[in-house]
Image (cartoon, rainbow, N blue to C red):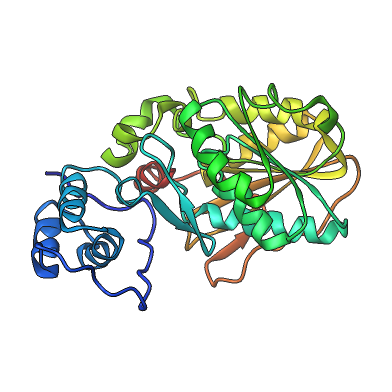
Length: 318
């Protein structure tokens, strides 16, 4: 079997959660996961053992993981930005790199100084980004939308608990008309894998996550362009649009932001392989935190990459 590697660092089990008594011993679970190619077999075993409620459930969960289901789909949740976010089968799994986007959005929202900023999470998937923003900012008016019915059902579990609303439909289409011109922070974790590179993604992604959450069109920027074209009429004066993309796509993304009247900046973190393009409506320009890690970078960087770097980036896109 091909190597099964989580798309982000595995969540850490709570030290206060003792293993559930099980017919499968910890060593047996680890051995089976290792044989299936799971890179973080020990950590995954702890999570599976502590999550399973019965020996039969543990055996079923181990079997699901062995045949290749994403760990988060097997567990039913993912750790993201300090939260345990519900993730249902068939729903896009939130990546650790997207925590960088959350950090940027939190800083920008706080800098606006508004008592209850209006936050919208487009292409919300599980709703992890919106839930994390609410947890970090406190009082917000939160709205989220996704085109996938399964994602919407899952997001409602996470977003409704955070006091937000979730809508089903394509991008801005299902949002209440009253949000036009009022959005302070618009986050859009759009699909950005070029169509011909979807096949290069890990099996966990391409086999178990919806294609609409992965495939960004010929150059990976189709959905990004649609979002940037419509965003100015939805953003409040001084409002910000944040979109995750790859480093090599950033120059083209910046062109799309500029073409639609948004003032662009790029921030990124090398340790997380994270690149975020940020556009501000009108003449307002807000300083952008570029992170705290030693691998953090900021500013628009050259698009040129070696073939090796391009291949590595394709594998890390989502």
